[in-house]
Image (tube, rainbow, N blue to C red; front, side):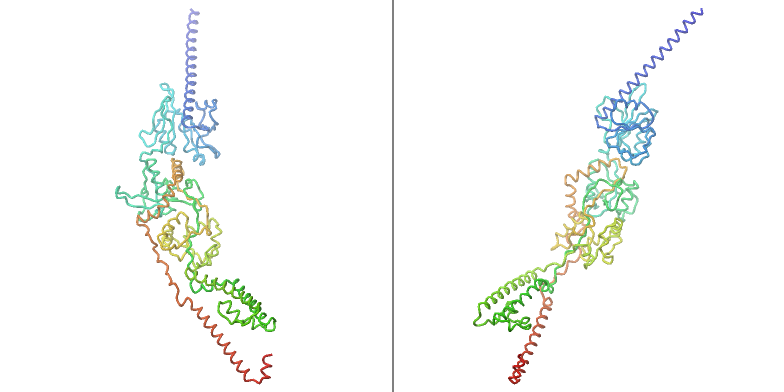
Length: 605
C-alpha cells in the first residue's frame, strides 16, 4: 500500500516537472521568436532609411538582446537622459524600453534627436493613441511602437499626424513604410507666421478673387510657395494685436523665441543675432554699405581754376623765364641786356606763350629764329591744351571730389542718416568704421519706419545705410529718372559679407523641410527673379511711384555772366596795372626828355 502511494506521488511529480519544462521551452522559443522578429523589423527600417547609430533608452528589455547582432554602434542610456552633449547624426535610430523610458533633459541632445526615428517597445498596457499624443506634445513625430502578447506575438503601431485616429497598425510583412515624412503633406495644417511688411520683402494686398488679404515679396513668396508645397495654410493673424500697428522685426523675433509663431516672414542679419537656434539656413548673402549721393557737377565759375594744374603752371613759368633769357641773349649774342625786369616782364615771351602776336626783328639771326620757333610751338601746345580743357569742362563740368573713405564722410557736406537700432548694433559689434565719422556728422533717427521713409524719399541731403538687396530696388527706381541721384559705394562698407536668415522656431518639426525648400528656391534662381521684380510689384500695388518723390535738383543754365565775373575782374585789374605801368613809363620818358643830355646819360647808367 505504501509502495503504491509512493509510485502515485512520483508519477504526479514527474507530470508537474514535465509541464514546467515544457512551459520553459515554450517561453524560450517565444523569446527567440520575438528577438528574430525585432531583428527583421530593424532590418526593414534600415532598408527604408539607413541608420548609423542606435540609442537605447531605459532599463534592460528585449531590445537589449539585439546588441549581439552588431547592427550599428550603440549608446545605452539606462538613466533616461544623457549627461554629455553627444554629436548624434540625423540618421540615428532611437529604441526605448517603454513609453516613459526616454526622459532626455539635455537641450542640445534634444535638438539633435528631435527628428530622429523612434521605436518603442510597450511593456505596459499603454494605448497607442496616448503614446502618440504624448510624443506629439513633445514635437517628436517619427514614432513606431511594438507590442507583444499571447494572441499577437508582435504588433506594430505607427503614429500619424494630421489624421484621426492618430496611429495606424502595421504588419511586419506589409509593403507600406513604417516611418513616413508627416510634414510633406500637412493636409491644410496651420503654419503660424507674422510679416514685418517691409517693402519689398513682404507687401500686403487685397486679392479680389478670393476676397482675402495676401502677401507678396521675395520673402513672402518663399513662405507662400512653401505652404503650397507642404499643403499647409499660412495664418498671419493669429496673434491678438492692433492691426493698425505694423509688426516690427524685433517683435517677430521675440515671438519666434517665445514659440508664439512658427516662421517669421522677415529677415534677420548675422550682425543682430548670435544665437543660431532661432534662425534658418542663410537665405541671402549681401553687403551692408552706404548709399551716397552722386557728386554734384563743379560750378562754372570754378572751371577756370580747375583746369590750371599747379605743377603744369610751374613748368610754364620756368619755360617763360628760359625763353625770355634766350631771347635776350639771341638778340645781341651777349648777356648785357639780361636784367631781372627784362626776364620777368618780357613782352615777347609772354605774348608768344599766350598765342598773341609780337614784333619780329627784320634780320633775325639763326639762333633767334630757333628761339622763336620754340616759343611758337610752346604757344601752340599750351593754348590748344587749355582751350580743349575749357571747352570740354564748359560742356560737361567735372563732378566734385568723390567720398572714398569714412573720414571723407565726416568732412563732406552730407550727414550720415542712420536708425538708432542700426547704430546700436554697430557699436555693440565694435565696428571700427563708425568710429571714424564725427558724431556731429551723424543724424540718428529713433524710429526705424521713419528712417525707411526718409531713405525712400531719395533726399540727397543725407548719406544712408543700406544693404545691397534693398539697394537693388532703389537702383531700379532710379532708372526711371533722367539721371541717377545715389550710388552704392563698395568703398564704404560696414560689412561686405552679411547673411540674411529667416527666424524659425527652434523646435519646429519641419524645419529641415523648410530649409531644403529655401535652398531649392535659390538653386533654381527664383529668389533673384523675385528680387528683380520687387520694384515693379511695389509700383503695381501703388506702394512706390515710378519717379522720385523728392524735388529734382535745380539745373543751372549753361553759363551766365556771373560764372565768368571773377575772370573779367581779373582782366580789368590786369588792364589797370598795365595802364599804370604805361603811364609810369610815359612819365619817366618825359622826365628824361626834359633833363640835360649829361644827366640823362647818368640816369640810364
